[in-house]
Image 1 (cartoon, rainbow, N blue to C red):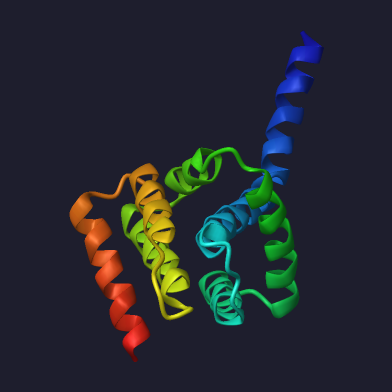
Image 2 (image 1 turned 180 degrees about the vertical axis):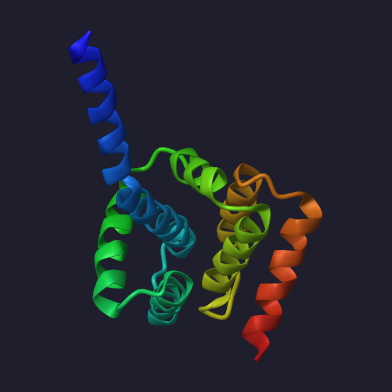
Length: 152
């Protein structure tokens, strides 16, 4: 009986201690999706990389060293990922619809950063938007918003 109670409290403590890793997971999950869009057309331009770093720094209020560490991990995860579900499910769990819409807008910003939108980039963003449970109208609105952002 004592072991069961002890295990219960240890599990609670472990969950408390994991809260910071959940935050990191959100940042990394978002970074992986951004990396996927950047890697989609097999062309990594400096503009795209700069855009991706700027987005992460602004979105999560990170230092350049934190952005670098997250991107390093995100690229590794991106290269080895079979699908997007593990990343999008994390975002679905913790983010409101409004926040998920903002993330898809950020994906478009990375796609437009090099001045051209490849079909594969659009395809990947569509897939991610579906996994983030965005309606088609919301998906289109994110594309328009990102396009407007890059005209300025």
